[in-house]
Length: 309
Length: 310
Figure 1 (cartoon, rainbow over the protein chains, first blue to last red):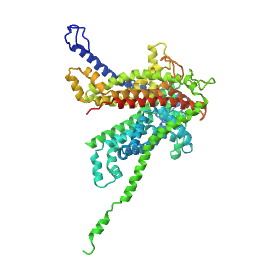
Figure 2: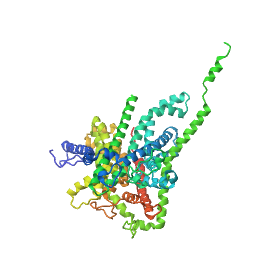
Figure 3: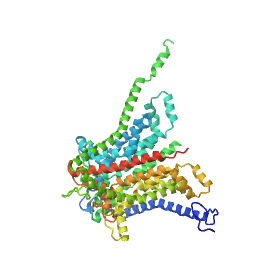
Figure 4: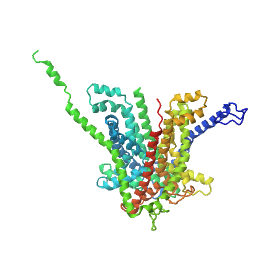
C-alpha cells in the first residue's frame, strides 16, 4: 500500500519499482467470488420465490372437486379433469412413439453406423434439431399430422399432439441413448463376439440391459419436458374447453384434446383474478406431475449407480 | 456301445447362422430407418416452411414483407412488416441475454471453481429444477408477480410489457448457460491452473485470464444456444409481453414477438389455406432461419476455436 498509483496490469508503480499490490488484487478476488456466489444463488432464490408465490396463490383452490370437474365458464366451478387426463394420454402416446424410435436410432448410430459422411450428417442434424424452437415443431405437426395425415389422425387430436411431441423430444432421447451405450465397457461387446454372438445378440442380451436404466432416466426427463410444452400444442390446435374424456380405446386417440399447460395458459390469459387462482392451482397439479416423473428418474439413476458398484 | 455318440451330440446344438444373419440385417435396417426419422424431421420442417412461405409470397410481395413498418395481417388494412415482430423479439431477447449471460457464466464459474464438491453435488440438480419449470409457469410468474412488483418501482410500466417478460425469460435460460459453460470450464485441465498459480496469479486472475480463454469455445457455444432459445421461446413472451405489434424498442409497453404472433393466430380458428394461416409459416420460416444461422455460427466457432488438451 506504499505506492497507491500502481497499475493493475504491469505491477510497476509510480516509483518504477515492482509492486505486487497483493491486498488490492485480493480485494478484487473477494468481490469476484462474492459475485459468483450471488449469481449462483440468484437462480435458486427466484425459483424459491416462484414456488412459494404459486403455492400461496393456488393451494387453497385445490380440492377433490377441482381435480374431478370439467372446465367451466364460472371460475369457481371449473376443474382440471380433462386437461389432466389429456396430458396423461399425451404422455403415453409420446412415450410409445418416441421411446422405440429414439432408442433404435441411438443404437444404430452408436453400435452399427460406420464413421462416414452420412453418420456425421445425421449427428449434426440431431444436434441442430435439438436447438430448433418448439413452436416450429408445432408448425410441422400442423402441416403433416393435422392436415396431410388427417385420415389417420383425424385432425387436431391426441394422436397428432403425441406425434408432434415425439418428434420434439426425439433428439434428446437419441442423445441420451448414445451416452448410455457409450458408458458400457467395450470388453463386454468383445466377450460376446468372441463367443460367436452376432452384434444384435450382444446388444440385446448384454449391452442394452446395462444401458437401460440410463436410457430410461433420460427418456423420463425428456417426457417431462414434453408434458410441460405448450407452444406446439397450441399451434396444432389443442382446444381449451373440453367437457368429455377420450374413450379408453384406440379410438380415443382420434378425439380432440386439451392438456395441463394449455388450460393454464387459457386461465392466465383471462382478465378475472379467480381464473388466475385456477391457473395457479393448475400449475401446482402440473408441477406435482413433473415432480413425480423427475423423482422416478432420480430413483432409477441411483439404483443404476448402486448396481454398477 | 452300439450307436456312435458323436454325431448325435453334434446335432443337439446347431448355430442357425443363416437365420442370425437375416435377423441381423433386418434389425440393422429397422434401426437405420429410425435414425433416418430425425433427418426426415428436418426435411419435413424445411419443406413445410418453404411450401407455405412460397405460397404466402405469391400473395404478398417479399419487398412488402421486408419493408412495411407495421404488422396488421389480421385487419382490413393489411400490412406485413416482419421488422415489427423482429424488433419485439430482439428486445425481449436482448433483455433476457443481459440477465442470463453474466449471471449464468458467473454461476458456472462458481460451480466449477469456487463451490466445494459437496455443495456442487446439490447445487447443480437444484439449478436443473429451474431448467425443468415449464415456460407457461414462468409466464404466469412474469405477468402476475414480476410485473406488479416492477410497476411499484417504474411508474410508466404497463400491464403487458417487454421488460418483465425479458427478465423472466433471462432467468429461465440461466440454467442452460450455467450448466453448459460449467461443463466447458470444468474440462479445463488442472495443470493450466497450477501453472498460473505458480506464476503468482491469484484465483480470480487465473480464472479470468487462463481458465476462461481455454474454455472459450464451449462458453460461446452455450451463449449462442441460450440466444437461440431466447429468440424461439414462446410462452413467457406470449403471456407477459402482450399481443400488440408495435415497432420500437420501448421495454415498458406491450409488444408482440414472432412466436407470440404464431400463438395468436393458432388460438383463433384459422382455416387452412387462408392468408392468416400462411403468415404463421412465413413468420416461422423467419424464426427458423435466424436460429439456424446462429447454430451454424456456433458450430463453426466451436470447430475454429476449440482448445484441445491432453
